Length: 147
Image (cartoon, rainbow, N blue to C red; front, top):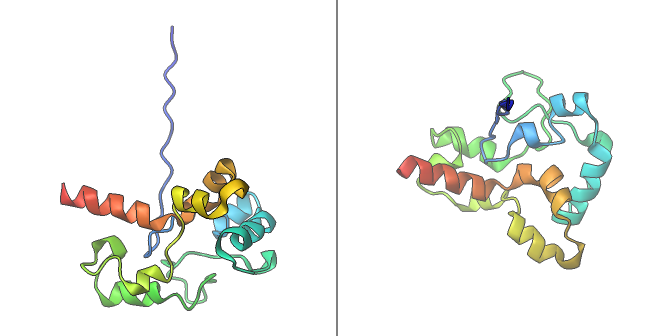
């Protein structure tokens, strides 16, 4: 007899700009499970030229309703824009992709590979950077809404 394995789909907590919290190593529940902030800090430097020390990497998610929520990007322009436009995320906005979105656009796999050249590591990207490929993710959402 062959055994059927059913994999539980992860709860994809999509941010306002299209990042995915459950894939993000900066998301508080992920840090509690396995702290990978040192590596994330180095990879943000490599892929985005961001210099954020590991001890400052901690985020409860832009959708947190806690009064004192710790946000990695407390000045995120998308976080202000999305509610103003009365949408759930950028994919639902008629102006997408706009200048505000571009300020927080992450790298797709192909963009990262092209930018990094010989330094590109597919496993590293999938494990640490996929959470931030928001343009591809939001394009897929728009396509599924249109069909």
